[in-house]
Length: 154
Image (cartoon, rainbow, N blue to C red; front, top):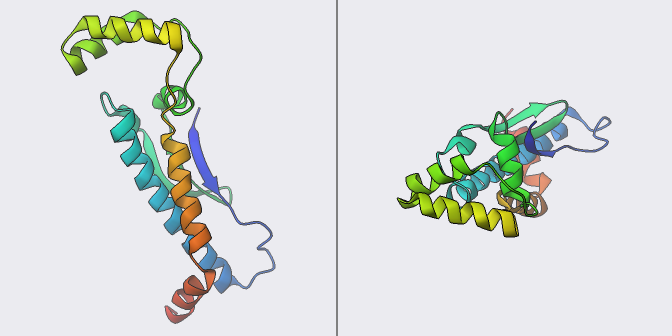
């Protein structure tokens, strides 16, 4: 499982290569900013041991898209943190250990366990908010500027 964000251009097949390159540069810059925002959001909203940030992968081209996200064992945990959950009964031992590690009390972990059972996990939206950064850049960055940079860089 992978929790990812992606962007791709539609119907660029008939565009001149220089314009395709400029669009790819624009998208890659936006996705890089989104990735940085995602890491910052994770570190502010959903950090325990830092494994989710460690399992994050930087923007890369994949099947004609530019993607970034979270892979590895953190993807399932990341999805629950991203979207939140309905109430459920999680394993208690990891939460007891978390309480001791983060708050110095296993009782705090037991309280978190009870809250998840009664209320679920609150949505953290670290990925959704990072996509707002991407969207803001793509909506505000004129392709003309990237075309000029691409053409002048030749």
